Image 1 (tube, rainbow, N blue to C red):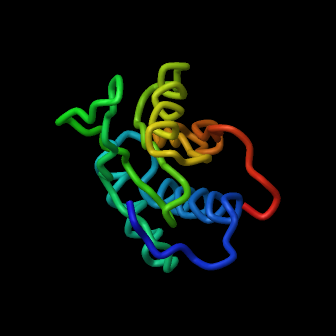
Image 2 (image 1 turned 120 degrees about the vertical axis):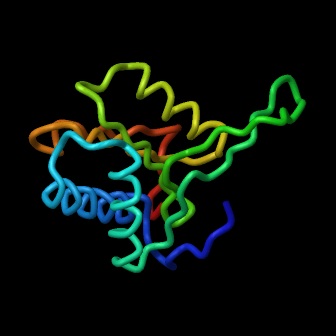
Length: 138
């Protein structure tokens, strides 16, 4: 998960750009496609915005102090700061939020965006998830 973070960009600035990119993808494609399609298009949109973004980032699972052979895979990691979990479901449920929070904890990140592209208006499928608090300037 090493990356070259943009100097001076806060978590909020990065998340605002991700949301802008997601809205562009949703306007272009609309609802009803597979998560993998939205992920590929969102990745392309973020890279066009000159943001550092990685897909299917492996996050090690450590259980009782032992690193397991399996890894979790987060959909997108943007600027090595914000985890993006992409869904294309009828509606978001608390388990989706819990999943993202678990990813944030395991990856030691503070902010995640849960984006459900299977909505008429993207804003209705957007959830911001925090792992702790952001300090001023983060």
